[in-house]
Image (tube, rainbow, N blue to C red):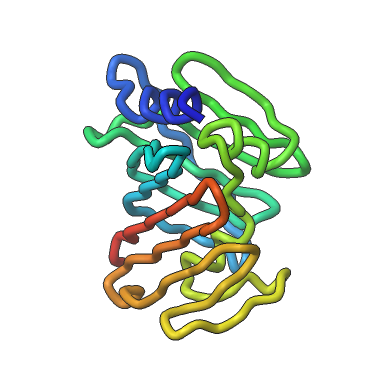
Length: 175
């Protein structure tokens, strides 16, 4: 887990080298295009947390898309692309392939993040591919609690309460 946190921090703080921006994949009906700030915290044993913050641009859909992460200064430091069962992560240092998006997020963060569901969660709704339970401030789905209390302000908080606890905060740029 410490290695994953170190890797994410190194990616986000990397300012010496960066990737060139590419156009996102062509848009299809229902494709998502969002940007903002993303924070992921993984609470490890002994109450210690690891994680990082990044600017993000998310485009596409769960079947084909692109996620770009940038440093606080705006340098693009990582790009994940996926389509046709091919997931690629590009960083200034290397390009790596993964079997799926869960494997990519598990490698980067130490825990999988349900990226397919994230497309709907960022729209303030449950992912239609899995059951959900309404809560006073949002809903629960896939073992995650999605808090939409500040959705009108562009803030979505997703927490996986199982150990290790993972908290993902997304602050969306307003259109």
